[in-house]
Image (cartoon, rainbow, N blue to C red; front, side, top):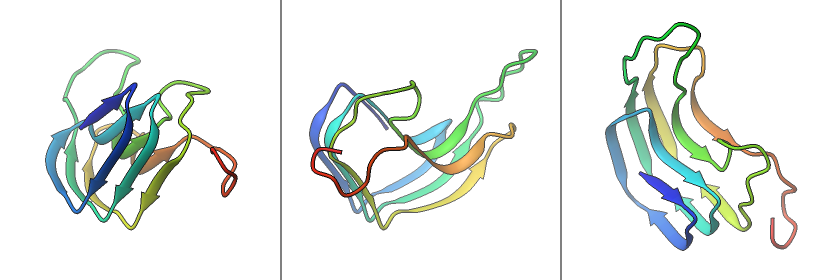
Length: 105
């Protein structure tokens, strides 16, 4: 599932199963809530290129591009399991650092 240049979206109580590369990927979004979801079995694209590898990620929240602007995002009580990657960058969550708890961040 990919959300780009989007806002005012709630993703709640879903099962995301057997996706390739990412379960949920967001870029330049605002007012997004991702809550109570299961993200299971994220797989590699199985491409081969010298010096290149994909990231396999359960939830990729505004971290693909440096300094991506994503105000008011919330990731609460989600479960990620089965990241079946072929690279060293196979993780459950990737989230851009920001100031927590302040209005608008």
